[in-house]
Length: 466
Image (cartoon, rainbow, N blue to C red):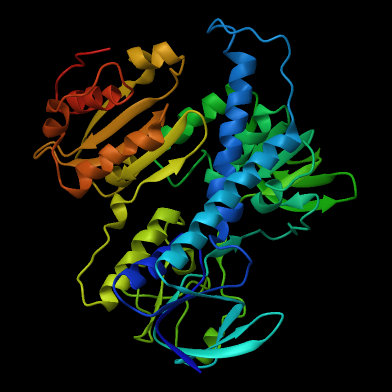
């Protein structure tokens, strides 16, 4: 029976980062993955392919709606749906190939198969050819999550689908109803609306991207509606039906009035559940909560001291970069180092256009907890850079402690928000004040200047630039 220092179960962002860091620290490391390619949901059917399609459809929409104003005239614009999806697949392939290279470079053993605990110390790995057993001094569970559904909605992967199936469609759908207005829902809505699909979002809450500052969701709703997406808030879906050619979704509004819609596809985007099927946790002393997430302490250690868990499988924000941070934390904790993750300082991003990004506390959280704050808000429409690029939707919003100037939260909806938010993360991680943030020099003209102006306003000064 082969013995390892560290065995990592799952090769998503959390798993492969944990394996690489473990190997860098000198541990004999093995990574177990049941699929042919490494990278997990994020690389294969999540973050990476979605961003590839978001970029492709963004270019297509720009060519249709903005190029002429830029002085670029095209006689005919055609959508090659197959090529768009082919490019997406090529992007995924290059990323998974890069992971293969990193495994080899760091001398990490790779085993293909489904991993299942026999007991607290032994792991069984089964594939189509064989079953083997291994042991490790430490285990890191990084099996991720799978799409959830709701009562009355059965995912058949043909007409009633998830984002996974949406990334592998053979042809452009004429119509699509998306159940859920969270991150996945609005990104999928953007992709298909841009290429001419009639898209409707049904959201149970009273605003989009409910986990983020509500100002962001309200502004995003206006933008998406302007682009032609039908958004229905306060709607509860209770049933779906499907046939060979279409699907139906049945729902109620906040007053209880019932209605239904028909579409080529119903896309279910109501969150994700921990993936522990077949993991054999029942053969260990590892504990899970009522929703099936693995319970861990501040070091991501389960109730079995040498078994750790990271990423989506433990709940919290289901973000690739959150899982990566936890992977490094666990490897370095095993190594005797002292690491800590400030979860409130992990940014969230929505890759619509304009992008949405957030870090720290929302205004709703500060109000609920009676925490005093000042608001600084500056629109992209007043930015010279945004006017030059015709990307004037959105704003930068900062929340600042009125006494000490501590940056409590940064919330952006606008061009390149996904990149701009890194500045807010730095401000929070190193406890830089709002005054420090507006006194540094910002290149002009840039989108980042919207943040400088927001810091100035939050600090009691007026805007100084455009």
